[in-house]
Structure formats: C-alpha cells, structure tokens
Length: 114
Image (cartoon, rainbow, N blue to C red):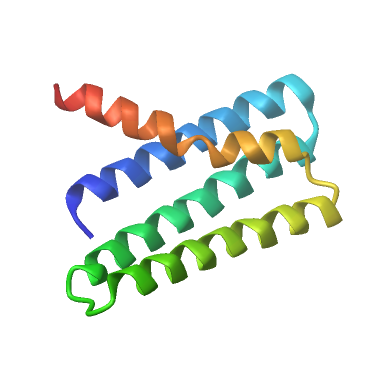
C-alpha cells in the first residue's frame, strides 16, 4: 500500500475519533459513538480491500469478473455490518455517517497536497 493510502486511512481514523469524542460529549450515548466508529472502521476496511483488489486487477486475465466479485464482497460486508448494528441496537444514522467519513478524509488530504 502506498503512502497516499496510508495518509488517507490515518486521516479517516482521526476524523472518526474526533467525531466520536464530540458525539459522546453531546449525547452521552455509547450506541451513537459505536455507530460512528464501527462505520468508519468498516469503510476503512472496504477502502483497503478496494486498494488491494485494484492492484491485483492490473495483472488479472479477467478483470471484469474480478471487479464484480470484489464489489459483491465489499457490499456484502457492508450489509453484514449494517445487520450487526441493527441487531445490537447501534445507532444506524451515525453508522452511515461513519461510512461516509472517508470522503472528507480524501478531500482534506487532496487540499493539503495543493
């Protein structure tokens, strides 16, 4: 994994921890904090999987099949995380916010480079 992806992952985890701290100070509800952290960890795991499969696709003989399989596995993983959150009464809204924390992390990192 390259230095760029490592910096994006560190930025995502930093945003998740800051957001979890703010959510805990405001709500004092652990399900809100867990939703944010689990969502961010799941999205980071999906991002790492995307990076690894993208590197492997370069040398693949059938990139279409490998791409579709990687998307299916990643979205199935997200589905399992959402079902886990629903079964354990974790706040689903903060889980979805945690899923979307990777986008600002990429945006902030790109702004630093300019």
